[in-house]
Amino acid sequence: METNDTPMTNDPQQAAPVAETETPSESAPQQNAPAADTPAPVTTDAAGISEPETAPQESPAAPADTPSESAPQQNAPAADTPAPVTPTPVITNSTKEDEAAYTIRSFLCDAADLAESVCTAIFAVMLIFTYLICTADVEGDSMVPTLEDADRLLVSRIGRHYDTGDILILDSESAYLFDPDGKLTACPGVGKDIVKRLIAQSGQEVNIDFDEGIVYVDGKALDEPYTNTLTKRDNRAFTYPLTVPEGYIFVLGDNRHISKDSRHPEVGLIPEDKIVGRVLLRLSPLSKFGTIDSSGGQQAESQRD
Image (cartoon, rainbow, N blue to C red):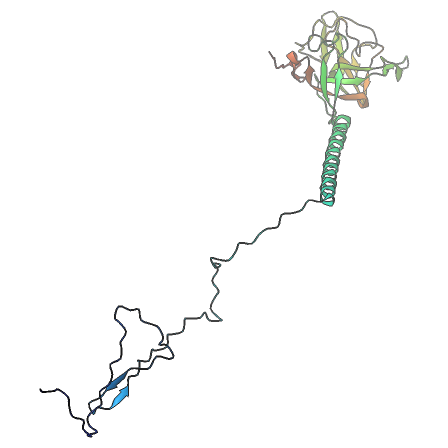
């Protein structure tokens, strides 16, 4: 019987049989690092000398890029960074008192500003009505048909230059007449403001034809479409023709038959410094609101429905 036993030899060139080591199954997951007590596998070279098989050295993983100190920081916060929580304000009694005090101070400041504005407006209105304009009410029918009883007028105090035909508001506290010696003398007047039309001024000559009812100024007959009646009434305050003295004016009413004007001893001549102002427009009644064309004696009205 033949055997396959191989006789032992002392030849060092022959390698001793090496027990096969178990190799990890290809299906088993590779371990990242061998266990400390696992013997390293050995291999046999051509000379039959067994050498331990060395495991391939794993190259060290490249270190992760770390941000440079000079690199700009990312603005976006990490996903797991919690959002900042705003604390809820606590309202205390002192806070409520501060709010109430602030509200009161604001109200007082607003009230003070309003009061200042109102006072300024009142002061401005007072100045306007003292030095610039005023209002006057018509009493009686001496200016019919131009003006009627109870009409309210807006009067301008600005300027001292007036034209023939202007409607004026006059202070007739005193009447100025000529005494027997031809000297102008102050006499008791109507004692209140009157509204009349300017006929002649300083240095002009006035003559009235009472038979024809025509008024002449410097020898020229006046065209007076605004009169209600002819000027035929003579109260004999003056002798005509009359030259108006310096600083005085001669006035007549439009309703010549009943008007108490410069023809009357209670009115006479009016000093220029007694002119209150010139009528600008009629304020009421509203149905006749409008300006008055004093220069031509015509009335321009704005009719209202």
